[in-house]
Amino acid sequence: MAEIEWETLAEVVRARVDELVLADQRFRAVHELVRNDGGERVQVGTAQRLVWARQKVLADRIQRRPAPPRDLATLTAAISALPRTPDAIEALWDGDSTGWMVRLEAVTADPRTEKCLTIIRHGGDIRLFNGRVPPWPEAHEAAELGTALAKTFGVPFYFPYPDAPELPDIRWWDTV
Image (cartoon, rainbow, N blue to C red; front, side):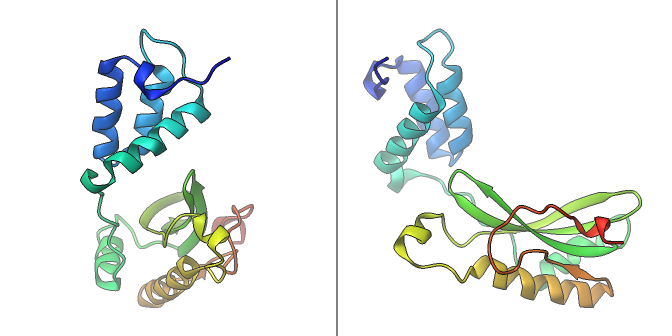
């Protein structure tokens, strides 16, 4: 099976993918190619390759989404606006097709709820190949912010894997 090339896709599909890439919506662009209504089915790997190539071509015009706020005052205000004070602040590794990040969460035990306060990412996993991590700066920043927030609200801070990315097998509420 020959791999699909950009030029062979319908113009309407190419225009929609470019629109999504320019809006910094990489995953939706890949989905658009995989779905490819009315055209030849595009495999996920091929769709990712095509979107990555379009990102390179359109790089200077992409409207990057701003990083979520990560300052103590903004996060404190976000927690204060919650319906109830959290039982803990939790930092959890998460990942996507570009690399690892840390989610800082306000959690309650009963009922089990979580509210993502911010996402901390300091670049994609290309850093691994360039020898720029570890240490993981996301973890350091999450530990500082999480500790400060926990102290402010008088609750525990839980970060099960502060040294390197690892998906959590035990959440904070499993420890109480």
